[in-house]
Image (cartoon, rainbow, N blue to C red; front, top):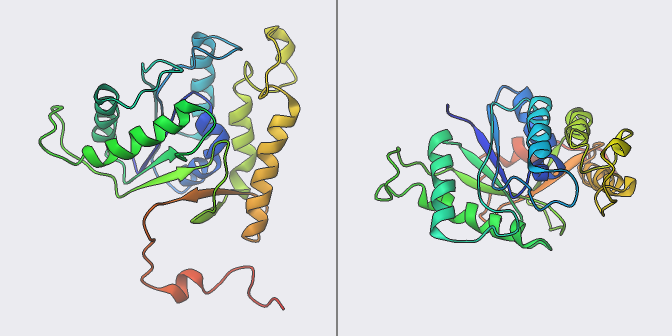
Amino acid sequence: MQLESVAFGAHPDDIELCCAGTLIKLASKGYKTGVISLTRGELGTRGSPEVRSQEFQEAAGIMGLAAHKMLDIPDGNVSVNWENKLKIIREIRTYQPKIVFAPYWEDRHPDHANTSRLVQEAAFLAGLKKIETNQEAHRPYRVIYYQCWFEFQPSFVVDITESHDRKIKAIQAYKSQFHHPEKSQFGDEETLISRPQFLETIITRAKHYGISIGTTYGEAFLVREPLRLDDPVSSLGTDYWEGSL
């Protein structure tokens, strides 16, 4: 099955936190989208791989994904090596996406930083015909980077106002990880991300980028290459600054 976009994350819930609003919006426009988690999140303080898998499935349904998958790369050991590059190359060739999303290459969690490099390199290598995987070679048009812990000056911001509520529901599907009215049933110790304040930071960040483009909620993205605009008047001529002092 060919997808228009595939988002890669190091762990189940990374995509939901960082760019689910955009994926939900793309799906609502009729684009086929997918999410691939490199690990099963087995080192997480709360929950278990089995619970995380169930939550991953539930979140995929909320996001309207056409495909979702977990790879078997070890949590905490997302190494930039040939074996892992081949695993991602196979996924890119399977789904032949036009664009892929990857985490920003600077992050406090080494798995996120290494996932960024793996996806960036695999996206290029997937287009080389002499790398044999018994699949047709395919190179995505572009790798787009989303924010995890560290922020960046974005290349563009997507208005996710209409999809923000579903993004929060997708995050809350991970009851073992994040604050939820029913979290007491898990009986696990509290972590940085399980506190109510953590989810508030996600919402506050979305509000910040929404304000930056004159809307309610937004998600920021970065690309390494210049963006092509054939018609600057059409692309840039109308926004919330129009008519302002």
